[in-house]
Amino acid sequence: MRLMGKTGVVVEHLERKCAEQVITKSVGMIQEREFVNLVLPWIVAAVRKVKLGISIKREILYALEDLLRDEKFQLDDLQVSEINRICNIPVSYTHLRAHETSLHLVCRLLLEKKKKKKK
Image 1 (cartoon, rainbow, N blue to C red):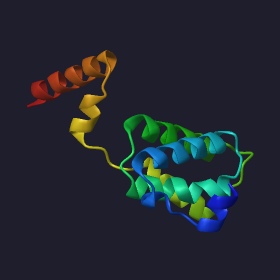
Image 2: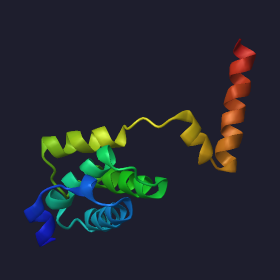
Image 3: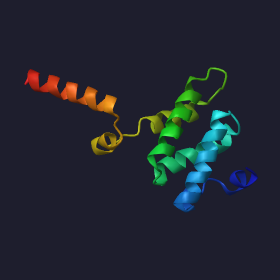
């Protein structure tokens, strides 16, 4: 933790595996509401600059959305803005299709069928 504070945000200079480990630990700290002001910039930088796996991205989104909903924890306007930007990152249709469950598939097929009827 001391090193994170002294070096500044350098997550994009780490190897991907190391960056993912740092971010996974950082997400855990956010979930525990520990060192949020220190690890939040690292998470923001990682989302913007590092190719992270889908499971880590999902963990990040869940943790940040939970942090936004926590009325006990006070975030400043800049932090809220950064979190909102992260939570609204566009994802490609192909990427979504690659991770859909059978329930999502049924919903998607029903929506496509409904669209065809309207045309």
